[in-house]
Length: 183
Image (cartoon, rainbow, N blue to C red; front, side):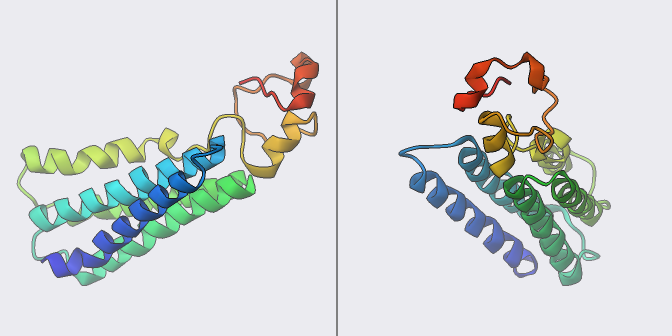
């Protein structure tokens, strides 16, 4: 049973290590995007994936086979990669597509344990899905993402900054030209 979800466990462990290494690499001068990326890798792509795989080992019946685990692995990690790529590229469309794939993976995890008896184990398995499935879990850091948020901080165009908390251009003072963004 564990062999079936071993790729999920391995991918989660790799994401945890990658996020930790990223955090260590940027510790001297952490930026919002790097801190967000590190947390997203460790918590969402890593820890939650390991927790869902472990829950599936304990709860899934014989109907959930290797094909289900491969589908979960592909969808979960492609969705995470899409959210990361979209955030780094400043592309709302990529973030939205990645989130959609990610949500499909979460639905697959839920379906894999649909025949498990209701109880604390099933509720514990659903908890990370509820937390990660919340659309706020996949949002990029406040202030926008990537190159476009840097342009916005220098007084450039704000069209790529899709944060609802950004004030209109006219409301910003001269401070935004020196890299201070109001959010």
